[in-house]
Length: 373
Image 1 (tube, rainbow, N blue to C red):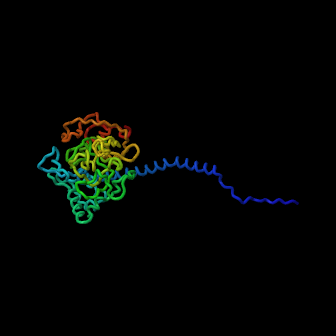
Image 2 (image 1 turned 180 degrees about the vertical axis):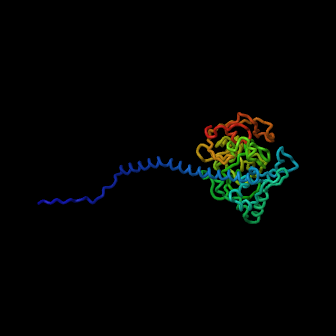
Image 3 (image 1 turned 120 degrees about the horizontal axis):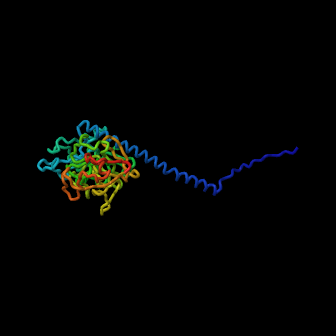
């Protein structure tokens, strides 16, 4: 009987070069298809974190209002009772003042930091009683001249995660404030703690203690009752990114009386106005965007197509770049007239766009659809 033996080839057949190339091409295609989805998911998570930060800041501002009867001042401005501004008095040049971000620290579980850097509120703006960032900076400057950075100076550079948007990766480490926001009047003082969240000053390029149309301006004490247009219709805090539009700081303002046309002075450390279009750099002849026509004095973000804003009722809304914009600069009697030729004056006029209307507390203009304009 004939027997047949079954022999199995023990050699393993390998992939051909063509097969390998096909597999690599398929993998590459899958990665190309999946990468945008992964990036989109990551940005969605970062945006959610950023929205939560702004929510906490808005709630802290409301708690401040409950405790003190008004929202914190946009920035503290040391005034002289001998020279009278139409509202509070005359602002002293280069009298550095704490900003709304520093004033909110106790309501953000940062009482030790608030005490360490010497923050206080405005007791009597017309009489000149105010928190003194200039004194705190003087302490830091003196300590530096004696050989080291003091605990006060170290605290001023503290990177507070609550003031930093995860989508903005333009800064790392401590401080890292843009050169346009440093306290250059105090040589050697380190950059202040960075902030991606900027208070809404309103419609005007108003410096010092001149009244503006938003919630935060120099020595402001805005109350809920002052927001005639409704808290849900009025923006309180917006974003500004670091890479193009110079961000800001939670600490305060170098020169409350300064116009942020060039150099490192003025309200733009902590507040923004509605004249610059959203996410619109509009650089000057030197290529920077710190002048009032660009987002260095307005609002911007690294989120695609728009930016987040916190409204007076605590709601967070994503405002798109294409929101209705029309800046109407006619001088009106409602607020003190300009002292600088560049100052866009405000008038209650229906020609103002949705973007302008949402940053005014009492223009009585319905802001319309904030997300579809």
